[in-house]
Length: 198
Image (spheres, rainbow, N blue to C red):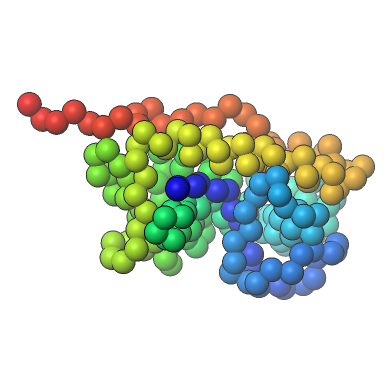
């Protein structure tokens, strides 16, 4: 079974967040979906604040900052083989829609996830040496997988509002605007197998 999940990368703690957060190992991945506990939602908000406004890691600073960013993106997992391909360094959740559309297949570096077009499927390698474990995504399954990731993000968004209390509406609006969560999903134009040459 294949899944595509929206994730952020948990960075090593610098200055403590101004609110309690879940403890999660540095360099691990936090999946963004409806099952997140309040501490995990707080960890997400703290990560966005630390990335976007490192000099003012507060809700006020976050709400006053345009162009919110956070390390992460779309993570692909094959439960049958156990292989996961995660976003590389400098890939951001803010770019998830461009990747989903297929018009920007740069997925980060060090390691540098690489996509190979193999006709009826896409092959994803964790690094650009194109060796070792990989995940194959049938083109016919790609739209449903991307729609599932979109649903996960939409289910995560209300948790932010609940966690933030009276600041919830403003915070949800900012996160939605900057990470383009609730807008309709634009799927890749062509998920069919190319016709063989004549």
